Length: 599
Image 1 (cartoon, helix red, strand yellow):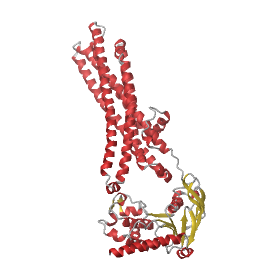
Image 2 (tube, one colour):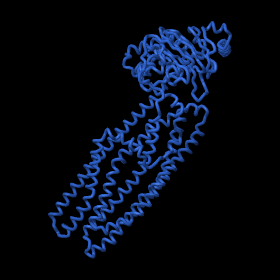
Image 3 (tube, rainbow, N blue to C red):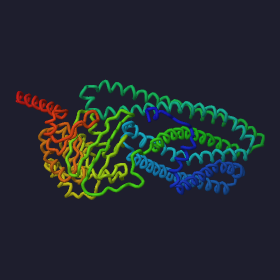
Image 4 (spheres, helix red, strand yellow):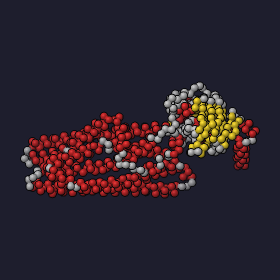
């Protein structure tokens, strides 16, 4: 998908897409059928008032028959009440159906988004995916509440009026229909121009959403580099273009509806001119003339409604195409049909000649092979871009290897159930993801099997309990979006508590201490001993001081495993690891000297 996806309007009607949309209506066939009956019944009743007026004038008023006039008045009142009841029923049912379909569709889209691999999210901005779930689904809700079912009422009412008018007096009916070519021309002009205008509005609203998401999310950078005025001016341009596009579309509506009213008034004048002459000549009753005038007023309303529904249908086709394109995106990484179960406690990890590229043949990992035995603590180091985090992504099967295989306890992870595979791991990242909720909720992440006592014990074990106890409501304290009210170190400690609470067989640490201060790092290093006890551990680190006591250290360089051994063994080799250590050691000495001078 690209930005142009938000600008494409699509066909006015696509049978393939409509069949897929109607599938969402199928579970609600009974209420939809009842709504259709209410619409048709309401349309039939809408034909009655002008005819009752004709009878009242011709049979009762002209003859001075008061009793018959009373009956007509009662019938008229009953028709109005019946129309109200049918319209109320139809509105309640269609709105309820629309909301239920919107709920079902959003759940389906979100479920599909959860199953898509990370490569998909690398290519598609989050803002555009949110538009699929929100704006596009809202458009389809309008289709189901105001289009698919109610259009039958407009068509039925229009056909009923035409048949009734022809039955009353075919000559006067043809006079009334004489203005239809004008209606067709105005409607065609309106439909064509509104279509282009709607496309422009869609394009600019897509740009507004993208701009807001990017700049609100990066507000700290905007303020730091004093870009407020420049970004405000740019947003003013985008917002102004969106406003002008909307004003342009308003102009077409401002012309179309008065034009239809004028054409209707022209039809009325023709009816009065021709029908009045026929009444004077006693070739047409006065009641028929009055009925024709009322039918002609009703005749143009469904035409206007159908024109409006055409634009709604066109927008729905475009939105449905974007939604179905998303839903048709294949799930590349999923559990096999007959998965091999994970067995045993403890975990043996093996990378067997693994190659991987995010794009084409630009390999990030090249013929990588290594083993991690159960309970072993292994660190992975290397320069930025060496492929360290990619190893974690492949191990958790966020991506699939290009060549080779990854084994856990002797089983290729592609042959394992995804839930079983990922249940073996707890992952602690440099950028901790916290969710809106409570402190306890962010530790257990919805796992009801983790008790309050286990949450508290996990927090205390990783030294998070001390700062949690200082919070207003301790573990029930609300956490803002992405943990905005907590420090980096506090968020990192909570992520360690989360990892411990889930009691994994394999612990993965990806730069877990690189963003914390020295004091917090000391707490975390102590907590790591608790975390790593009796667990297979894979740690990615830039700070070599945090991994010196690891059982084995793997040194990556440009996607290849260049060195392996303990801290002392690697220093003795005086290779890549030795140079990395020397660089960091000198950097630490320089920082210490600066602190000494400033102190």
